[in-house]
Image 1 (cartoon, rainbow, N blue to C red):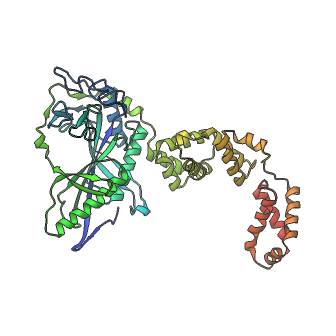
Image 2 (tube, rainbow, N blue to C red):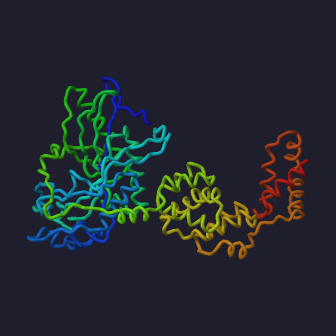
Image 3 (cartoon, helix red, strand yellow):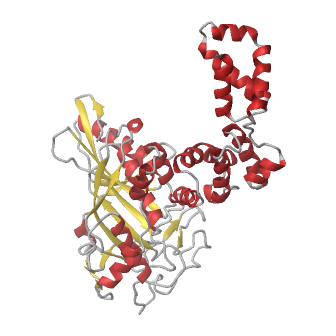
Length: 488
């Protein structure tokens, strides 16, 4: 839940948000042809005769695209429709060779489902909230017009023509930019865990159409606008904020909000009119005569369900049950690569709570400093588990572990080798530690007198001086115990 409101001259306004997310399906080919789908290829080098709509070409559904869409539906606990059908959505555009898009209006592959966004006090989301998802239908993408290649002509690149998309349509359940951002991040995480979409918004393999309307709290729904093809979570949130405020200003000045399609300008953070919004009947949808209905059997559905990995919510619950804080569990499960790395760390024998604290602070801090992703970490999970093990069994202290980790990052050497080569092994020799403590107390008579006079905060000073004298190699627990005795 959120208390987000737009404060207008006539009072407070509530924002109502729904998202239509287009996610490119991870597959070996396009939805109805065998053409490749690699990003960044030279224009018009990944176009089959089907994609170019040559006469007599017939589409054949790609089984893997259907499988990935079904697995995605299962991951959001959605209804999987054993019987679904493709429709033609008719419109003319230069990057649409067929003159229609093959989509699913009346009988989609996936029906109603949901996902839950977590509470986030900083973002103003006071408690976890379930966002309903209306449907997931499978459709083909259009090509791309390029207007900056020639002074008087637009060029057409059909590489994207026919690429398989899942359109994931939420219900209008979100009430703030923060909720929409949280929904989009969670959906992206699920898609990446499942492996049905790489979630790369910069490359356009995941983008959102943002539906926004405003109303006085408790009033019926207002007229919505749709801002097309927004390609980052931050831009989605900016588009909502700008569009909601714009609509409030229009309504409070006596105008009406037009149902229209708009475009977002990321440089200015504003939206502008693109065209009046069409209704479904304007596209003259009808069943595609070249494609039989999709009929899924139980064996296919069982295989899809069995192939699903542990999903973010289940993984997060498992981590929390192992003693990891809710915050750390959320950080570790936000990206599938981080969760897999952490699971490998646990499999290598690391203690969960200490491993989570180390990974979210030391490892992520180092990777951020080096400008690297976790998949490209110079230190692997097995090496990290060895380092943490040396701390756990008292071989090295936590402060020495930080030094060892820095050397591991630079050299790639294992922790045990570095500890031996550099003589960093922690000492628990009580005789040696007692001798150093005696020296420290002798050198600091004033502090000793103050401590014994009641200034107990100086205990930390004596610990620090002892550790410094022993170059950080003394066992901190032993130092604490022996200091308490010496200070009496």
